[in-house]
Image (cartoon, rainbow, N blue to C red; front, side):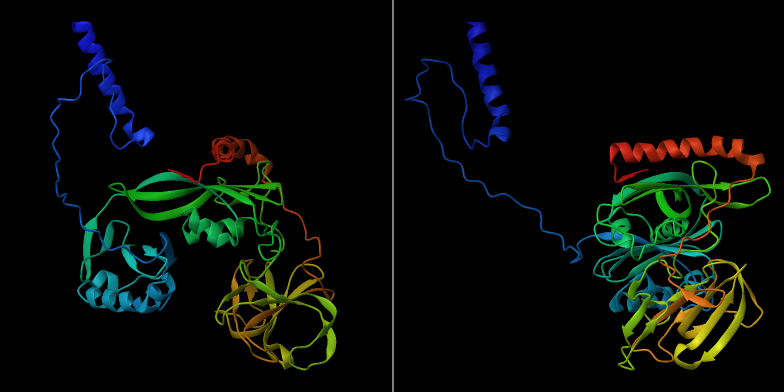
Length: 427
């Protein structure tokens, strides 16, 4: 008797347990020969209280955005640069009047914000000092600001992604802050031209510093290591600082990734016109040589020096408009035309470091719209910078190669983990 009842209960249990998987609405098992004609039946109707739907943001997703505060920058311009919409900017500025820390922005410090794709500011964190954190959180009707004393904890964060369109689109999808994405592009700028070399399906993996307090991300540090697979060719970068405080990114063999010349004066922008011996000029409407490369970009976009140099010319010159010419070592020089204005301290005879901002995109001179006209010259003759083979990297000092190898090994192993497991993020 016990065995029969036990089997009957077990069949009912197994039938009920399979309901979610089989999609059956009402089904259960019964023992053979069981009479069912006289079983009582009852219909039950019950009203279920469903939770009300919470309003959701119209954006497809939200992402972290980090920006460094510029000299003389206002709170309004910073929020606009972060991508915050006009309504939230106004509400934020109204709430910020009660906080001297958020009103007194310190140039060079970073602001970390989580923003939706529609421009809604969800939260903002500003490290006003090394120990003071300002939190700005979104409420039902306004933003709420608080300050607290903190002790930051650093944790390495691992991310990877695949290029579908642009580099920034892929890094946003992988939840990589823009600052780290820029470091990624900068590290490989001597090997990869992110204007013309990028392909759909290219992949990146990276490890970078992230600083947390109480489990919350407060700011990002530097990129520690990265790998970029461009057109099936792998490039690696590892950050290293030697005992003499010389720092930079190196490949796995200890060769510096800092080239004598960067491939482009701007990391991300569209080439609107390439080097050509014959081109129909868009303004003059005549066929003439175009011995440079034009990069389309918004007015005010920073333009950087492609190599260490001395300014040989900075001023107005014919169709170039506002022009900067830099003299590099040996026979090389570069020219940057149509600038809206010059970088700080850019004048004849000034020394310029590779990557330093020497001006800003404009439309001065003969130009149909804002863009940079860039020329690479050898002994004064213009050459196509996209076709030239630029000088190679210099190796790490032999005295520190063993130390670098010990430092680089665990970082390279992390990159291999990301590559082999195809993770999008891990921290």
